Each structure stands twice: as C-alpha cells, then as structure tokens.
Amino acid sequence: MDANRRQSGIQQLLAAEQEAQRIVNAARAAKSARLRQAKEEAEREIAEYRSQMEAEFQRKVAEEEEDGRRRK
Image 1 (cartoon, rainbow, N blue to C red):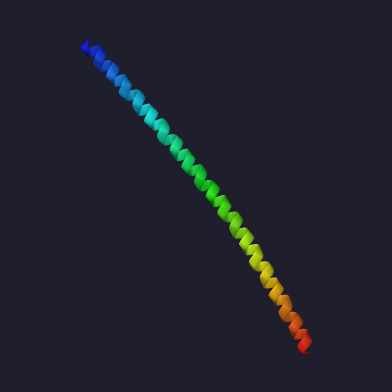
Image 2: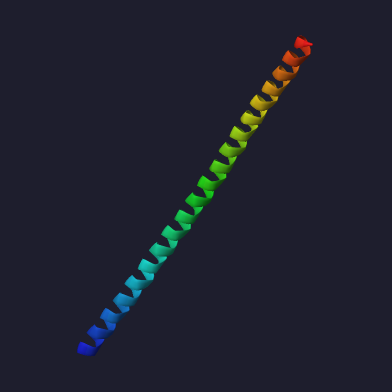
C-alpha cells in the first residue's frame, strides 16, 4: 500500500510539473507575440513619423526655393 501511495504521489508530481511547463510555455509564447506586435506597431509609427517629417522638410525646401526666386 505504501508503495502504491508513493507511486501515486510521484505521478501527481509529474503531472503537476508537466502542467507547470505547459503554463510557462504558453506565457512565453504570449510574451513573444506581444513583443512582436509592439515592434510592428512601433515600426508603423516610425514610418508614419518619418513620412510626416519628410513631407514637412519638402514643404520647407519648396518655400525656401520660392522665397529665393522672389528675391531675384
């Protein structure tokens, strides 16, 4: 009887260890997905900002060229 109880206890520990590993793996996968999503969002925001800054720069260059033509 004592051996059966020990074997049952070992089986419970193994099952608990497997469940804990499953939970850890799921958490790692979720974290990885969140990081990937955050990186993609940041890259989109950077591209949008860069585009806005480039448009602003081109506008200022065009204004300077126009001012230069007016002064001549």
